Length: 246
Image (cartoon, rainbow, N blue to C red):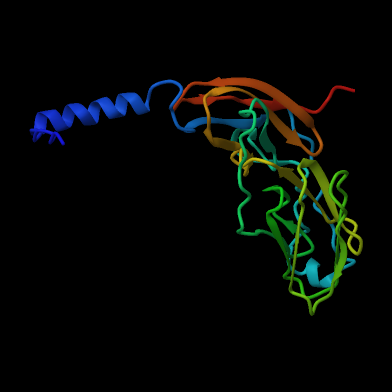
């Protein structure tokens, strides 16, 4: 057997550099591309009244002056919160993404769902908490998955469910407190993001390619964009929503 000659420092550096080039060559690049951006509201936002909760004194005490209406959450420069942004087309054919085993937490606190908009993967457990110490009834309204409709009395602090099939964003409501609403999106991949009030989103870990990206808002509808990213590239895509003209 021929023994490989000892390599000096220069040879080792050259071999390492060659390895880096090969790993970065198209066709063997890893999934390290990113689409990022900001969601903004265009125009004069409507004034939304706080949610009155006098019918439920336990929750009313948690909100001085009423609970904020989360149907339109704005930050500096009219950036928008509670917008679900996700890859809706262009993922590599046949590639699968395992669902996390860590549950997504969905809390009822002050007769408000926290968070208001949730993204999760199909089969990922969802932990439903009751932090109010009163009766709630969680009623999901999916079209593909089976509906979840269960009462959660004060003695039941936690329940768990999951949604095994991917589908678009659907509504969740409380049959006891009609003002309580939230939204859940279920995906077969991890490329989704819900914006905070700063309106920012990031979809990372993508393969190089051309993708359809969808931005969803509960009142202002859906917008789509086509974004192409190269290996290890970050592309920026902005979305602007407005109240539809009458």
